[in-house]
Image 1 (cartoon, rainbow, N blue to C red):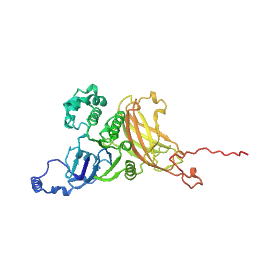
Image 2: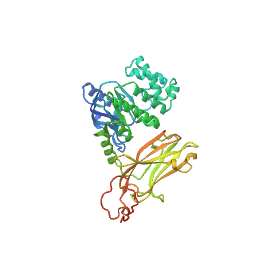
Image 3: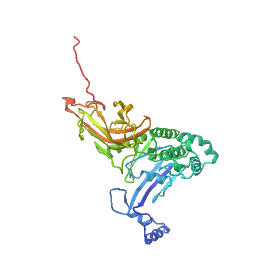
Length: 425
């Protein structure tokens, strides 16, 4: 279905078009002689911290064979080359070296608005995208009602898409890409723009596509739960290269355990804050003891607090938070929602900076590695934003619980149950 052979992509840093006439002539001379661009030999591996060199390899020697019906999740840190690879597969840009062979119609959902004409209405863009995929007008007409219903944009479908919000763009774009029956569906993490309800709907649609076994899906996401649920194969990218390829659970475990250091605090400034839920922007999440002092070690005996600092950007906002704990294999083992907080259902937040705290009692979890995720929501519990694996913590053994027992405790929970022994004589 897709064959990628030694594909590389180089970008020049700085202003585009600032090459010399000598460089351009040299490129042309090598091209007509059938030789490689000489300037491709001086690029460096993609590294955001490296200040040297004018050229950078966004991808380097990528080889990948994708079979018909495979659903592949592509994971990796920001800047690993995931989106660049999808752009090459979608023919948005060409590889600098190597070749890509794909068979069948390809539909892509990359950046918000990609493939849409801003002046055309949503309905007209549906027909435009269908025509690009090689469908006839009658074939598109048979699907259009289903597309509009799925997108939830019926009221605005005859308005120019330049007036759409980013969420509406994504809903319509995904509906078009998923319902026009492409052989290959390529979806970037742009789905993160949509609300939780639509994300669930979109994942369900992709699962439906995948279950038929006749279409191929390539899916980039930072949502590991979605990758596990949807994909039958995963690829890990790092510095423009594929470093691991195989079973999704194994690849995700490897990625999180090798690329995530133990961290008891995570803080953002305005330039790098995660895409948050509507009227809430995360500032910091951190672990402290009951005296609100930063904890860098945790014991199975001790209580600890998950502190969430955030800014409310709209008056009279309802703020819902869910702290989710995962074990070392990313399985959810516990979660707590702040709807048990006093006056939760009558409380509205003004604009400003707030801190919400979730107390996790000691003598509850076994020693080991745990991850903490946050789910943010508003009035509707089903509508919100999930930020996964923000913290990686280690809970260490405690002598007060263990006492003189030196064996292994099984499981992730280790509560201190009360024991009583009585004579039956």
